[in-house]
Amino acid sequence: METILKVTDLTKKFGHLTAVKNLSFTIEKGNVYGILGPNGSGKSTTLGIVLNVVNATSGSFSWFDGNTSTHDALKKVGAIIERPNFYPYMNAVQNLRLVCKIKEVPESRIEEKLTLVGLWERRESKFKTFSLGMKQRMAIASALLNNPEILILDEPTNGLDPQGIHQIRELIKKIAGEGTTILLASHLLDEVEKVCSHVVILRKGENLYDGTVDGMLASHGFFELKADDMNALKKVLEGSGEFSHIDQEGDIFIAYLNTPLEAQDLNHRCFEKQITLTHLVKRKESLEQQFLTLTNNQEQIHS
Amino acid sequence: MKRLLQIEYIKLWNSRSSRFLIVAYFVLLTSIALIAAIKFDIGPIEFHLADQGIFNFPYIWHFNTFVAAIFKLFLAIVIVSMMSNEYTNKTIKQNLIDGLSKKEFIASKFLTVLVFAGISTVFVFVVSLILGMMYSDYNEISIVFSDLEFLLAFFVKLVGFFSFCLFLGILVKRSAFALGFLIIWAILEQVIFGLLGWKLVSWDTAKILKSLLPLESMANLIKEPFSRLNAVQSVADQIGERIELNYHVHWYEIALVLGWTVLFIYLSYALLRKRDL
Image 1 (cartoon, rainbow over the protein chains, first blue to last red):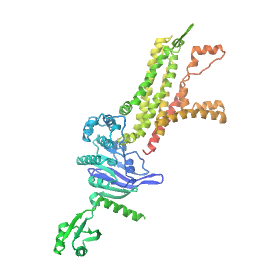
Image 2 (image 1 turned 135 degrees about the horizontal axis):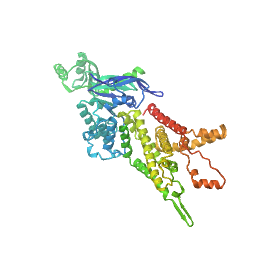
Image 3 (image 1 turned 90 degrees about the vertical axis):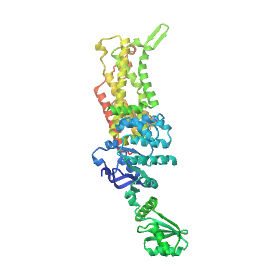
Image 4 (image 1 turned 180 degrees about the horizontal axis):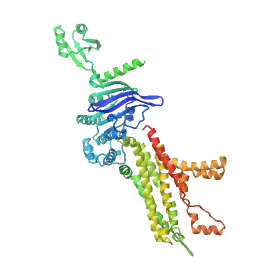
C-alpha cells in the first residue's frame, strides 16, 4: 500500500492548552478517512499542521514517504480548511486561474471542475455574491484542480442547509467513487459513517480510535423484542447465554448479542417454545452510540 | 519568478481599488510635466517656472526624482493593502495550502515591489528626459546623462519604503491600522530625535543617529533640490546668506537603505514563518 501521509507523535500547544497530544496515524492511498471528534478536539489544528499553516510544537509528519518538501507535496493535495477563502472581488474563473498558477496546473481544467460542482453558469459572478453552499462547492472545485492524490475536507457541510449538505455529500461520494483518497474532518457522526471507510477519533487532542469503521462497529448488534408473554420471553433470552445483557425500554426488550445470531433463527426458536413475537427488529449500534461509548470510557479512565 | 509575478498580477489587477490607485499613481507621475505649464503673468512681472532652470540637465534628475517620490504614498496604500488583505480575506492561508511556500509568498510580494519601483524609475526617467529636451538650456549628451545617480537613489528609496510597507502589512494585518502605524512611525522618528538631542546626546550626534532611522534614511537619499535653484541662490546672496549644501547621493546612504530593506523583508519572512495562521 502506498502511504500518502504519515503523522508521528504530533503535539501542538497554544500556551497552556494542548490542542493535539502525541497524535499518530497513517493515511494509505485509496481509502476514505474520517477524522471524528467534537468541536475543539484538535481536528482543524491537526490538518493545519500537515498543511503547513500551523507550526507543530513537537512531532513530525511526512507526505508521500517524505520524498518531497511540504509545499511541493501540497501541490498534489487538494484541501479546504474551515471556510472557503477566496478573493471576494474576483469572479470564479479569476480565482481558479490564480489557484492554477499556484499549483502549476493548466488552466484548461477550470471548466471541467466548475461544471462538476455545478458552478459553470456562475463563472462570471464575483465570489462575494455566492451563497455559502456555492462557496463551499467552489472550494471543492478549486481543491480538485490539480487532480489531487488526496482531498482534505474540513467540516465541508458546516453551516449549510439540508439541500446544500446533500449536494456536498453527493459530490464527495462521486469523487470517492473515482478512486481519490479523501480525508474528511467532521463532528457529524453520520457523515463519517456514510462516507468513510476508516476513522480516527479524537478527543481533546488525543487519539481514541484509529482503524476501519467496520472494525469499530464490531459488535454483533442487538434485538428489539416484544411478545404477548414477556416473562416467558425473558426466560428464553436469559437461558440461551447468547446475550450479554437485556434492557427493558417501555414494553420492549433490548437484548444485546455477544455472538452472531440471525433474526430468523431467534424467531424460529421462540416459536418452538410457544412464544409469539409481536415485534422483532435486529439493529447494529450506530456510530453515535459507539462514539459516545468510546469517549465515555476515556472520561472514566481520566476521572 | 515569472509565475510569482503572474500570481501577484492576477491578485492586484482584478481589484478595482488597486487598479484605480496604480493608474492614478502613474498619471500623477506624468503630471510632473504640468509644472512646466506654471506661468504667472502679473503686469510687468512675467514668470514662467520652466524658464527658471528647473528643467535644466542635469538638475532635472534631482528635481524630478525628489518631486516624484512624494507620490509614493499612493502606491504605499496599494502595497499595504495587498499584504494585509491576504490576512483579512484569509487567502494567505489558502495560498499556502494550495502549495505556495512561505518563501515564495514573500518573494512574490517583494518582486512586485521591485517591479513597481522599476517602472516608476523608468517613468520618471522618460518624463524627465522629454521635459529636459524641451526646456533645458544644455543639450550635450555628456551633460544630459550626468548625475544619473539620482535615479538609482529614487529606485532604492522606493524599494526601501515599499518594503517597510510590506512589513507593516504583515505585522499589523489590517490595512488601515498599518497605514496609521506608518504615520505614527514617521512622527516617532522625530520624537526620538527630539528626545535624543534634548536629554541624551548633543544635537549633532542626535542628527546623525536620526539619519540612521528607516524613514529618515530614505528621505536623506534625495535631498531637497530647491536651494540649488539659481533664483533661490541669488536671493540668498542678496541677503548675505551663503547656502552650502551637500546634495549629492552618497554610497553609504544607499547601503543604509538597502540594509533596512533586507531587514524588513527578512522580518516579514520570519513573522510569517513563526505565526500560526
